[in-house]
Image (cartoon, rainbow, N blue to C red):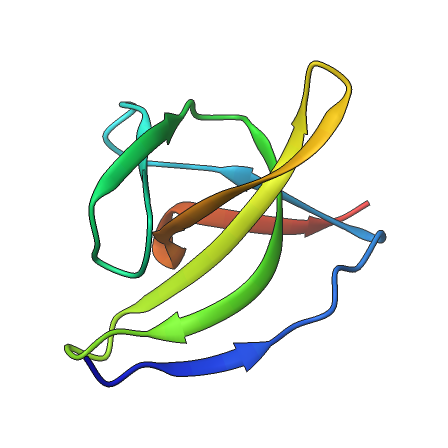
Length: 87
């Protein structure tokens, strides 16, 4: 599986939100295009840690965020369904 990974710093001045146009929870995977391990609801605030392209040249984001006061790395989501804004 030929993945191209690009490290991105987490930037506090940007907030990213899950924005899946189907209005269904966004699948979280163990690797780009891998097994589904969780799901995130639209509007969930996330931080992007890494971007990778899968073998079909689709962009995936490794995301994390706060849950019950604790920061967690959740996994990989389809990058197209994450929107980032300036704070």
